[in-house]
Image 1: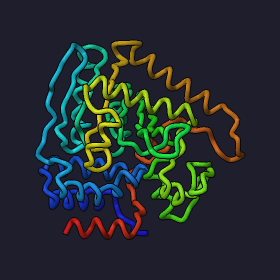
Image 2: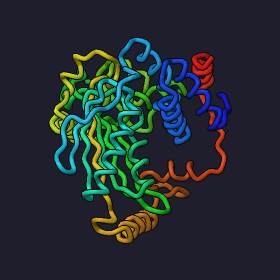
Image 3: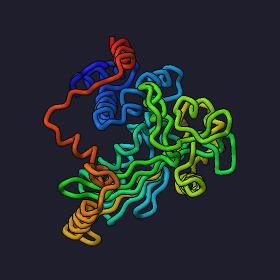
Image 4: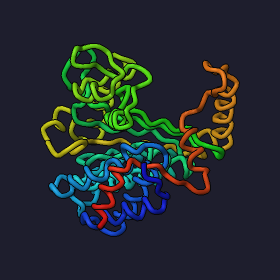
Length: 336
């Protein structure tokens, strides 16, 4: 493992992205978000995505010069075309537009089509709650998980993000519709670790906790079995409908890497104009207290609220990150 400071990681990522051809401002923003994802423990969508992203840029699958364009507006709703631009930049812009609409209308919905991988969806939920806004966001993807009852990939894992602000730590949920994402499988396989619960099927068609075996078959287990499968289908349909973009079958035909041509939805709500900021604070505080009073299943542990681990990491004054040595050296080479 390589021990690297947050600032060193961010600066190295920025150099690699600049060398790949990103504009200075875009390189700075992307480097910060990837470094934050790594600091928050999501290495697979932080430093781990940088080599593949740069590969996609080199192949022309990501247009580093594209900008999101408004193509339709209806009150508190806007539809944007991402023109296959940088997914992080498109998603952050869409989040900011949704926040602006929420300030005006109490809620804002931005539907983004024709974009590329947004990397860690939780980044945009955190961006909203840190400004005092609640959020509901999701993306569709290419087929990467079997629908319930199927053995071949036919639905996306379609990550869903929800957030509610609170002064002493927001509630933030960032989850895929698969029990474990491919990124998590990769992280655990590299560390030689097994999953804590069944995460998919092996080559014999049996449920497995072996991340490498599941990645080889691409038979991820939907979260909640048939329930996660059904939710993935509906998230896909709604994302395509609201953005007038591609559903998963059409994304499969784009063939421009993971997430290329996807649709994303950014719904943001202003608590101050709805129940009131004080009420929002009280609701979250009561939920946290209620969870804290629950009896832990294992002695010596605690029941955590969604987003608590990330919030605690973000409170640390200085952070030294332990990175996979191979991926760190690859990124350093890309930065030279």
